Structures are given as C-alpha cells and as structure tokens.
Length: 358
Image 1 (cartoon, rainbow, N blue to C red):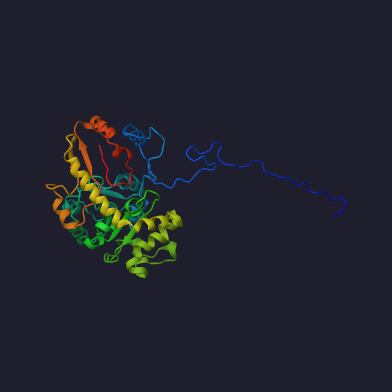
Image 2: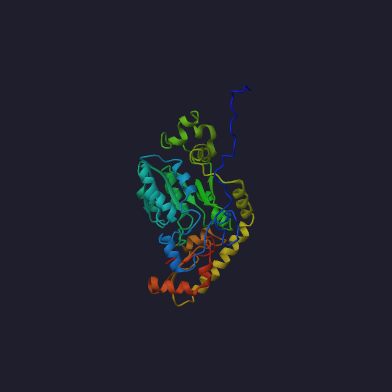
C-alpha cells in the first residue's frame, strides 16, 4: 500500500438494536412476542361476541374467516363464465366465497334448498361445473339426501363436492355415498384441540373428467404453465388433487408448516374417541334442553318428527354429529339474558361439541 493511499475508516454502522417488545407480554412477562398456538378465542359474554363479529371491537375472532380448502376445490375446475349449484345452508365463509368473491372472477352460483333434491336439478345450467353441499347444514345440522342429489348430479355429468367437516370420516364417508370430492376443515374435529389451521381435500378417483369433451379444460387440456401437461391424461384418478398442489398451491402457497402437520396428525389419532364422546354429550344436552321452558325449538336430526330424521337413521348409525342450534322464546333480548346465565355457553370454544345461535 502506497503512502498516498488512505485507510477506510471502518466503524459500526448499526444505528438501531432490537431487544424485544417495549413492554413485556402481560400474560407471561416474555420479552419477545410469544407464540399463541390457538385457532379460536373465548368471548366474555353475548355483548363481547356481538362487538367482535360486528367489528366494533378490533380484537381476535378466529384464526381465519374464510375457507381456503373449499376455495381450492371449487376453483380447481371453474373459470370465468362457469356456474355452480350449491346448497344455501352451507358455512358462512363458503357462502361468502360463492356469493360475493367468485362472481368478481366471473363464476356464479345458484343456491338451493338442501332438503329438496329436485331443486338442484332445476338449477343446473349448460355452464354448471359442480354441485356443492355439506354433510350437515351449518349450523342447524339439517341433512341432505345424499343418494338422490349425487344421482342427479352424475346424470348431468357433474362432480359432487361435499364438505364433511361436521361429520368427520368417523361418522360419515361421503365417497361411499356418491361424492367425488370431499373437503374437510382439519382445524375443527380432526385436529381437535383448537391449535392449528388446516384443511383436507380427498379425491374419490372415479369421476370421468373427459367424458364430456371440453367441459373441464383445467384437467383435460394441456396446461401451458406446467409444460403442457394434461393432468387427467397423465394422472387419472389423482389428477384433481395433483393439480391443486402443482398449480393452485404453487401460485398461492397455502402450505402447512411441519409443526402444524404434526399437531393435526396427533389429533387424528384420537378422532374416533373424541367424536364418539361429542355425539354422546350433544344428545344429553339436547335431552336437557327439551325440558327448559325458555327453549322454543332445537335443531338436530336426532329429534323425531323432523323431515330429515329418516335420513339420520339411514346414514348415521353412530349418531349425526354434535353440532346443533336452539331458539329461545322472547327474541334476541331473551336469548342474550339466557346466554349470560349459562356458564357452559360462555366458556365453550368454537371447536367444541355444541353451538347455540340466536
């Protein structure tokens, strides 16, 4: 180095140090923000829940308020200009997806009475691409006639997608009753402990996607984004779920972390025992509610005299789930007072065995 060369004045360039949050976590005194491994949150009372859902209180409601699993299943075979026939008693997140979000992409839905199989047929149009309903209506647990609806859909060469979240595979397997695709929210009964968000899509493998030329181009025509692959030609009975992984997940990235997958697998190991107890407990609560003067009506297919009670006995030898609703005499104000008096309702998490709606 020559004498004329100057030395670079090296020095620390750090202008800021991060040492954790300014105030320690009030629950644990942790310096860094702790990880809360939960999907759901407890509402203190009726007013607190109402304020959260009305967005008047900016706090947490749920780990998410949409259905990416159901969204992937539907979007996998639909494009702008396509049409869906769906039951109108589906989960609110799915209803909003079909009613408000997908129309922005040119995909429309006709909602029909799940208890009327012929309503599904009357709603089918030339551009209809699928029929969608749930094992139990959310949240009233009303049952559709699986065999009748799937027969109608298949006669028009339409795949049937069934959301089986409330039943779980322990109580009901839609593929054995004509469904072609089954979606499950693993967040709820499958995971079982309110710790992890996740979903499951199961393909039956029997639907002939190429039987009507051009009807399902996303599966039966070359995909330019995947080297011209024809998914159905190359992969046959697993083409539906493979395209979701290869294309939709590639583009949008809803991927479980290893730890989340571990927690869901751990929960699955006790699924049969938990669901069996859930059903047993729900039936006991229903029997109790029948004796409560303030209760005007209860909605669960186990109740004799309901239009779907025969379907309950036909399809559900192990009991038809643990989700039910009940109405309180006197309207909203009476219901508010009743819920305040019931500690079991105040403390029940969203993934538990029963739900009450007003």
